[in-house]
Amino acid sequence: MFQLNLCFVDSGPMDYTAESPYLMPLGGSQSALCYLTAALAERGHAVTLLNNTSTPGMFRGVECLTLPEEPEEIFLNRTFDAVISLNSLLPMSTIRPHLPPNTPLLLWTQHTAEDVSMLALQHRLVQEAWDSFVFVSRWQQENYIRRFGLQPERTCIRRNAIAPAFAYLFADKAQLVSAKAKTPTLAYTSVPNRGLAVLLDIFPLLREIFPQLQLQVFSSLQTYQEPEDDPALQALYQRCRETENVSLRGSLPQPELALELSKAHLLAYPNTFAETSCIAAMEAMACGCDIITTQMGALPETTAGFARLVPPEPHDNYARRYLSALTDALMLWLKDPQAVVDRLSNQVMHTSRRNTWPVRIWEWESLLFQRCRNPKQDYWPEGLPRLKTQAQP
Image 1 (cartoon, rainbow, N blue to C red):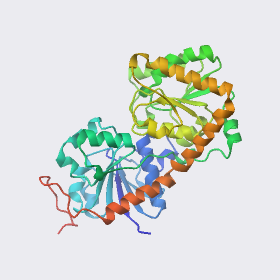
Image 2: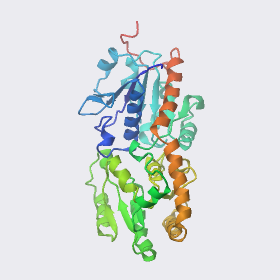
Image 3: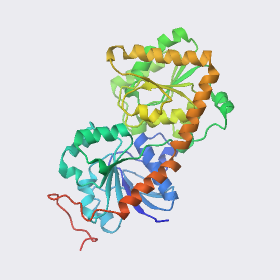
Image 4: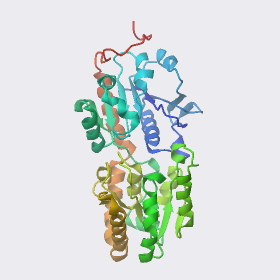
């Protein structure tokens, strides 16, 4: 097999290694990066991860190094077949000048086109510093092309996948049924500011119809290593504590979350944020949860026809429409549980077969082989200063 020497860069402030998502809560983009790099290393590629780690070393076959303020020292003495930046344009100025001119530099972004960190792509000079733009959904790709005028042929889609802990949880329908809690249970697993307030507003109304209904809230900002002292956030947490039948569980490591989420009947995600992918929904699908969410962003793609999708507009009666969708889903569990289980079994099978990292690794290898075997002769944009490296005579 043609082996590659790859460098992945996360210029953000988070402290983690390729081992971290197995041990602690971690954001979706960072978890995806860890699983991808570990899978590439397992396939025999040499993989380096540069980020803000405080514990450099070898983890799951990935060399995890602390990204220095001046990364020249790393790239002067190493030759990589490709460099991939996660969610940041910074490497075009901090790393690109130290690379040989024909080394592919790829932007792998999970942000929306409106995210402030991506706005510099409106400048042609910035676009030309990158060999490829890798997106996680068709919706996201089309938005970037439309907003920034990216050349479609320089873009591609490499979707996210579920954590290994969520794959193949049930051998058959009987196991799926036996895993569920005895009382009807909802789960919320995204960060707090993406719809938890809406869910807390309608939950007491749901309990008027389903008195035994439980809500498990697996949510915090711990996944992004951010402080939680914001008064609005604390007020939201207090609402969870004070609302009957609501349990505030916080964020869990993914192996623990997989076990707990398998007990839930529904993922209740009345999102107010346009997701570019939504690994949370993907993993709930693998856990055999009925998905009740909205048509915003890439959620129709991610849920692949298995979810109940509530139109987010008009906004003034969004909560009422979402309440109606949740009520209908819970009623179906009571009236025709076999039909629900049959559908969820197909959903679990679909997710475990199509949305795992062993599947994604082939897609990424195809992309990287193509870029490394057919690099541009010199796509360095005219007008952008180039620093001389040892690889350049």
